[in-house]
Length: 303
Image (tube, rainbow, N blue to C red; front, side, top):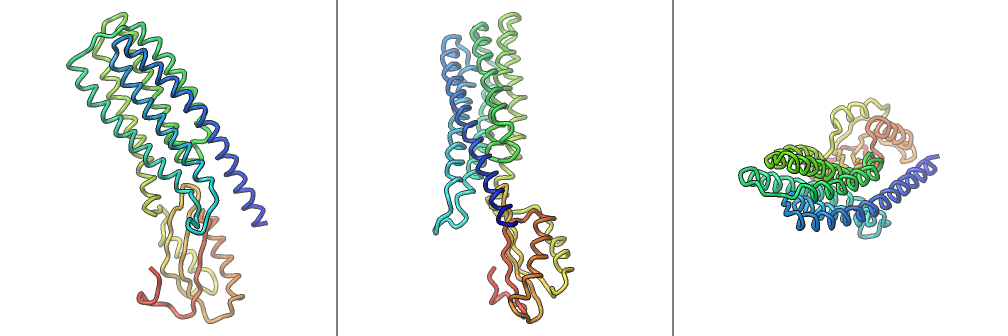
């Protein structure tokens, strides 16, 4: 039964990964088209905001390519030198994506501040047309990534990239309309600051989560978990517990369990109960337990 569940879990992960790769590939193509359109449109219209948005899209395209490559890498089987496989490639990509996005958003805020005091003349018609192309392309990209964003922090960061680009295009579209009809040049930088402040907040959450995983952190209440384990019949003590996240889907645990002197075969029942508690209550799916009848000291215990 356990093997069947494990096979089903790996099969599901493979299906999700395959779907994410296809979605990312399509989104990369969309963003290359949008970037080219915005660069041409920005040069024709003289719109710095369009050129800035094109640079934003170009950096996002690079991040999407990074996400795509990281998923391909994460699918590689484990080896003798990478015994856990390459699952953390996704986390590294999420960290890089969110960090880059925060940097871009900060840069655009600074640029917007300068543009507020020194507004540029822009051809509104060209801005409107290109912004509509960017808006449709980005929303379509976000649609393709939305489902996968619920299961992968990597895809979630890419999804946020696309949503941020969609809002950027919306801001450019609004400014293009107002520039054309009302000559309201100062609205574009204000919208840019507001949108990028939201982007920084959302990206910071992903950055914080990815750093937590890379630093082998966990939000699990260790004291509460130990108190549940110690209630299991036959367990006299528990110590040297280590809990960490391999990626967003796999939590690992290792620890020492103190029991009375018994045969190895007799520890099977206790081990099964421990695994039940850890899997059901804490979603820990990789468990390494060392049983001992004499508690080790700090000098002869592995840290």
